[in-house]
Amino acid sequence: MAEHLLEVVDLTVKFGGLTAVNKFNIAVKRGTIHALIGPNGAGKSTTFNCISRFYQPTTGRVLLDGVDVTRMPASAMAGLGVARTFQNLELFGELTVFENVMIGAHVHAGRSWVEVLSARPPGVVEHVEHLLERTSLTAYRNTVARNLDFGHQKLLELARALAIRPRLLLLDEPAAGLRNREIAALDALLTDLCRREGITILLVEHVMQLVMAISDRVTVLNFGTKISEGTPDDVRNDPSVIEAYLGQEMAHA
Image (cartoon, rainbow, N blue to C red; front, side, top):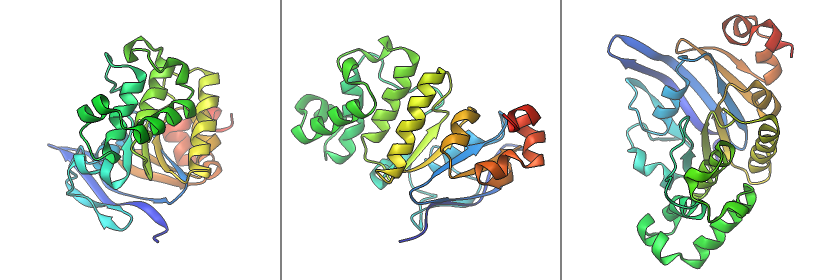
């Protein structure tokens, strides 16, 4: 079994004359939490979109468990055990919390999401109910998604991603807009998902409270180029990161 579940090799993404990501490399060790941070416009979400196959890189490769998936369609990634959340919530607003998570679970049910919603296979229902409990959403089971507050909508998107039983979970700013107690709960949940359930997590995040608390390794992007990588303490004290992103006050917080 390969040490690294995900490897991105010499990834370059160009939009016309703009180079959004330039010869970027990252190796995410199996069973760890790896954070990708940097200023707005650094290329983090573009990199995520290449990994999850929403974007096709100009050059470079994406390897999942040693297999080149660079040319695979986005629709195939869930079947390979890759799930993601989005910076902007992508929920079915008119469906209930339970139904939203059921849609995520259809990948392993061998049926379309429409069939899963109508038939509600017992094994799938049990899995969904477990995830609702896991993400503290059981009390909101029958609530229409658009009626949830922002923090619970974030949890719902996470629960739906977990429904595909991922081995690699890509989280795009999971703590954005959350209050301190919600961030603390997310910290505990993500740590537990990784340490107890073995899910490898790659997250893009600006909330340094979360990044520094849970990450095994941190990679820093600036203007599409990697400028630092290491443990949270390594990155926090790197002068190039302090100058480009964290600032002295944040680095010593």
